[in-house]
Length: 187
Image (cartoon, rainbow, N blue to C red):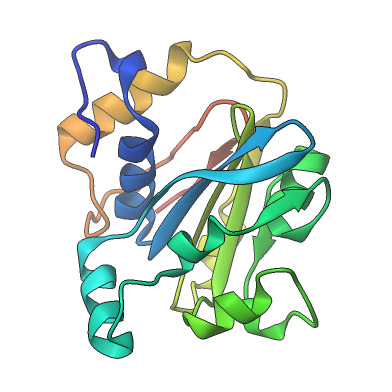
């Protein structure tokens, strides 16, 4: 995992994905990077307890995140592709209810139920859970600034909250504002 440095703008994408999982209670997070006309997984994160549970359950090291590296999404394809093409979040309360999708079987194989995809800095942040997230949590995702491309404010948010020790067990009412594809998540 990347370290949070004194220069908050140098926070690695891996640290950002870890922070996203810890603050939302997500079982995974993926950053899909735009590469020419497709989206490809550039980085991912799974909490240690999720990795351990999958190893016990499956007997291997495969995860939804690692298998997603095998997929290339075109504009509008899948939830990440739609979020990227529309520059708006794509919220899927129950992946199991979708009639079809490029990673639908993969999501079912790994027990993924909820998924949120948010456009962010030349790609898409995707995160989700094996649990049914409450309608209140799903409804708390709001779009703030689709044109934001500055990295000035992103580091301060991640660095400040990480230094405060905010994590998924926090009882704080937390508002996350991620720049560019910025969204707010009230917890």
